[in-house]
Every structure is written in structure tokens, then in C-alpha cells.
Figure 1 (cartoon, rainbow, N blue to C red):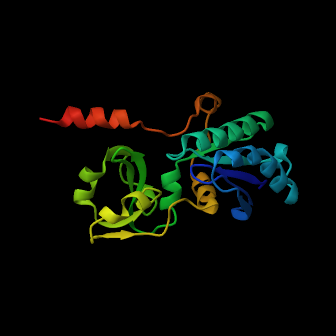
Figure 2: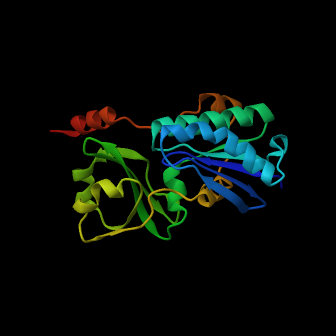
Length: 214
């Protein structure tokens, strides 16, 4: 099997290369817009270091969020451009699913959607148990139990009930993104062209909540 390139930019910008089911190396560029410009040079450097020619790539895996919209757009653009240029498959990996891949059992993965709302999705042994949605934190927390992970923990940790077990996991590992990518189908050409960050707007959540109000 030829090599894979893995990009995850929902939080910090990270790049990895893998081959035959094994992560060979990864680089963490940190957070901040200034590091986005380092993404492409880092991709070329890692591929070169491990003797992987872009034209021989078996696939590109990219995290699609939710997360930093700007960071995700940069990562997805790089992934789309490379996959289209060399003609290799592109796999879109939901960031929350990659996080759940490292958690046995049931886990709720949450992210801060601002203004008191959270992104949330439940997984059972890394398999989605419901759809990604935006809800008011105060509504979700009433029934919160068991394991919780995700980038939203820091913002809401102080409000978590005792029944919640907070896991020390705020971003997915590059290896987890790769493992999940191997289980997902590649995008069609049409899907590649239309690929955007997985981003649900808070206003949509508010409208849904309002529609349920008596």
C-alpha cells in the first residue's frame, strides 16, 4: 500500500503521514492563523522525509470538523487541491468521530458553539449513535451522564454534574483520524468539489429550539 497524508486542522494544525495501517510521523504546528501558511511546506517535508511521492499517495484523509472554521477551511483546501492534482482518493473524517475512536464504550463529544450552545454527538464504540447537532448546553447537561470528551470541555467543565466523567481529550489524534479514514468511503469528484467544513451555525440551533417552544 502506498502512503497516506493526514491533515487535522480543527484546532491546532497537524500533519501526518502513514503507510500500511501505521502512522509513520506527525507534526504539530500549533494554533493560530500564522501557522496555517506552514501547512503546505510541512506536507511536502513530511512526504519527502518518508520517501512518499505525492503522485503515489493511496489517499488523503482530512478532518472536517466541527472546529475552527478558518483552520478547517485551510486544511480542507490543501487536501482538496492535493487530491485533485495527483488524482488520489480524498476521505473526509468527522473530527468528533476521530475523537471517539480512542474511547471505548459510550462517549458524548462536545464542542463550544458559543453563546451557551454546544456541538454534541454521541458514539458507542466509535460508531455514531446519533447525529451531530447544536443544542443549548443547559438543555443537554440535564441528561448528561458517563464519558464526555471534546474541545468544549474547557468552557463548560465547571458546570458539569458529578455523573459526568471528563476525559483528557480535546482534539483527535492524527493516528485516530487515519484509522477512521480507512473505514470510510472516499469522496466522489462531485463531493470533493463541494466539500466544506462541517459547521452548524448557532442561529440554526436557536431556530430549532424556538420551533419546539410551546
